Amino acid sequence: MSRVSTRLALNPEVVLDAALTLFAERGYHGTALSEIAEALQVRTPSLYNHMGSKHDLLRTIVDRTTAAVLADFHRVVDPADPPAEQLRKAARVYVHRHATHRREALVVNRDTGSLAEPAFGEMQARRREHEHALRAVIADGVAAGAFHVESPALASFAIREMCVSVARWFSPQGALTADAVADQYSGFALRIVGAP
Amino acid sequence: MSRVSTRLALNPEVVLDAALTLFAERGYHGTALSEIAEALQVRTPSLYNHMGSKHDLLRTIVDRTTAAVLADFHRVVDPADPPAEQLRKAARVYVHRHATHRREALVVNRDTGSLAEPAFGEMQARRREHEHALRAVIADGVAAGAFHVESPALASFAIREMCVSVARWFSPQGALTADAVADQYSGFALRIVGAP
DNA sequence: AAGGCTCACTAACGCTCGTTCGTCGTGGCA
DNA sequence: TGCCACGACGAACGAGCGTTAGTGAGCCTT
Image 1 (cartoon, chains in turn red, brown, yellow, orange):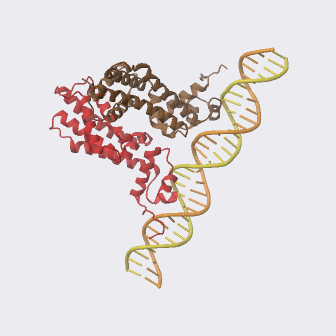
Image 2 (cartoon, helix red, strand yellow):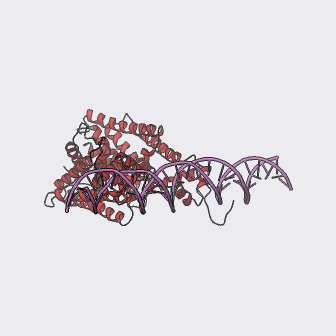
Image 3 (cartoon, chains in turn purple, blue, cyan, brown):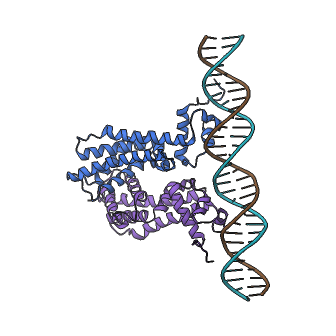
């Protein structure tokens, strides 16, 4: 199998990774399978030895990412903690993921709508679950007098999207590490809800 | 010209408006000219009597929107005002525009990258100008001791994207008016920068 | 009544897309 | 050494894309 030119061994994960890079850069509909093949130095039909379809690539990416976001949340957020601590941890891990998994975040936020049913409904349900969980933390904090916002839903939207946007500008080569950004952003989240 | 079935009089603005709706819903690459034509109850080639090309539609949408955002900013932000007042007004008008011009905002944020040069460079320059103007307001506030953030750039990103995201969920039929959302979000912006 | 202009239409173009099929060279294993 | 499974490939597909050209019907002006 040794070749003159170094070519990556093709396998499902490598194909998925190349698709991830290009989907994030140009969008799902803006990316052709021929471009994914070219990035892997392979002809287009060869991709089909390692994937089901173009749509399957997108579904797999969105599926894994949304599942990981939910897992993150439930792993770090302890319902026994005070609301401020829950919110800090939830925002922190959410930002951290968007900084360390930029491509996944960009694809999910841009192209989830391109999924066909039933995948679209399933993925949207997951996103809603995360949203409601975050909103519940805020509502609890307001009820406990720890937070001060007119509308927990509004604050939840604001915090979520603020965190998501980190994927749009973060760079591993930048001045700030993912941890540092996560720290500052979780501070922003607490300020938004008026935590002392 | 009177017909049995009511059909809108076709003209450049009507075509642009239909394109705006579909681009916002499915993305630029996800929308076919045949779908725009169908929405207008017309055959695809008829569109060319009122537009240059599909790419022109996108360029016009992004051009008008980015210009309006900059105009908004300079119209309401008075450099003589204290930083907190400048930030409040800047965030307020930015949110208000994203609530009242949802489709435009969605297209700009999703599909500006699909513009060809030189349009892409021009549009990105405009967005950068707005970003730097907002960042300068924050930096001024920090220098004056009115705001307290580690990094004005980080706070600027957070505030901008928080405001932008309003376009993703706002509904004119919802419980809150655009004005009410703008008020609450500009409050969030001031909290993020630690204004008292 | 005649003329010209506007504009929606049919037809067709060249191209690219995602996908399928059958072939053939290759490496691992008996 | 012979066999077999794997997988990269060329060729080809039907469909859809954005776009262009030419035609003809309807309105406004004269």
